[in-house]
Each structure stands twice: as C-alpha cells, then as structure tokens.
Length: 320
Image (tube, rainbow, N blue to C red; front, side, top):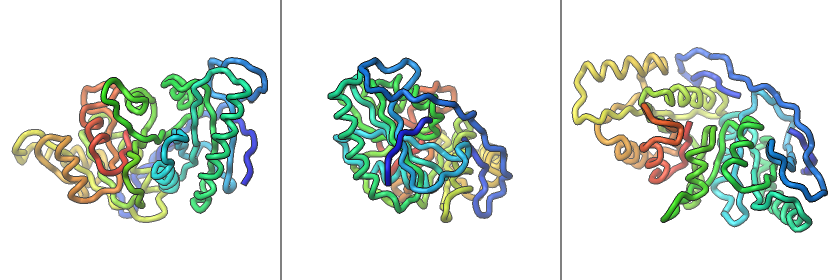
C-alpha cells in the first residue's frame, strides 16, 4: 500500500431481517472543495481547520456521500488495540471508512515537528498493515494544536459521523477524553483500553423516548441495512417507579411501536436506569450498547445515565 497527499451521511432505516420499518431518505452532506495546506514553511495553523491530509485506500471506495465516516483518535503512547479493532468492526457494519487522527501539541510547523509527523505516520503505517483484511478505506490526518476546538473543527469540516476514542478518568478535573465526551458534536464510540475485542453480534439499545431515541433508531437502521451478518438487537425501557400499572405499560409499548414498528424485542424493567442497564449488560453479555447522549430535558453536554454507563459498562458504548 502507498500513501499519497489527498484533499478532502447518513441514515438508512430500520431494515434488517424481519424488520417492519420502511426505508427513509438518507441525509446527505454537501461535499466541500478543499485546498492543500501542506507547506514546508514555518507558519501557524490556519484558523479554518487541520492540515496534512493523507489517504491510504485498500479498494475503490463507494460514492463519498453514502460512506459513514469514522474518525479514530490516535496517541502513540496508547495501545492501539482494541480501539482500532472496534473502529474497523464498526466500519464493516456501517459501510464506512476509517480516518485516523493524531493531534500534535504544537501549532507551528518546524523541522522538529516535521520529523515527529514522519514518525507518527511510520508507526500508523505499520499498525494499519494488520487491518487490510477488513477491506475498508483508510485515511490519516495530522492536526496542529491538541485542543477540543481542533477536534470540533475536524468533525464539522469533514462531516465525521462517528468519533472513536479511549475513555480515561482523572482524579481531579476533566481528562481530554471526558471533554470529547461532552463537547464533540457528533456520534461517539467510547472504548476502554482494558477490554478484549470481540465481534459485535449482540447489541443493547436503552430508549427513553427523548429526542435521542430518534437518533438511536437511525443508527440501528443503518447497522441493519449494511451489516454483513445477522445482529441480535434488544431494546430496553426502564420505569423508575417500583411498579408499572397496566395503562402505563400499554402507553410505553404504543410509543415504542410508533417509533420502531414492533414491540417484539422490547424489555421493560423497573428501577434506577443506570443500575438496571449495567445489570442487564452483564446478565445478557452484550457486545455493544447504543445509548442516547442526552436524556429528557438535558443539554448536549451529556446526561447522567450515559456518563455512568460509559464509565461502568464492560463493553464499548456508542453515544448518539
């Protein structure tokens, strides 16, 4: 494979085997014309976004507007596995391409920084040579300035559909991964570095009928449309009251059917949402959780349930 300079969505409907939901139009993002920002001179990063865009392709890619763009945060100090494994697995399930992103601390390009770039590209080249079996398009992007604003610009400029990263906690203050969790304006794939990769076959989708539930539906529909194999997907709704009266249960089932077209795979539980979700993940051994990023009446910075599940789930979590 060779690297060359390269310049530089989204939903299908719930249409898996046996699904009763009809297909909707995919949302399209307009394709932007981009100019090369590559330069040997010392100069600050332009204010309109990242530089140094390199592509590695393994086959002729599909039309750009129908490809699901998955960006992966790369740090050479981290173990790239299982994060890379899950990113490629999601690309396979979503008909996507994987964009590996490394942010340099510096905002000025010097000879020393250029040497660091070359070292990063060499390491990534060696790692990615192990993933050609997935046959998905790959790219590498080097950014200048490691800040949340740099990643926000990346997401907006390149219309990133899913950003994958390792989750780390700090004893005091927020870690950079916690900032990504709260402020990055796209879907997130959150992975812990201490879990072992396994193929995604069983998925849990907790729903609360907030705005996030519609985003969960879109994500699941695309999975079921493009997954090369059958997925087992369960939905769960948790009622915080100790007992659910029959009329309340009937209302929940009605809302679920209106949204997903069936009540076949709906599980109803009572109790604390965080505890119930974590217990269910352990009990049924799910491979992935697809959770709404915000709950009812909560802002974009994330809800209490999603933050708790990300910290405690023994499997990767997608936040939409």
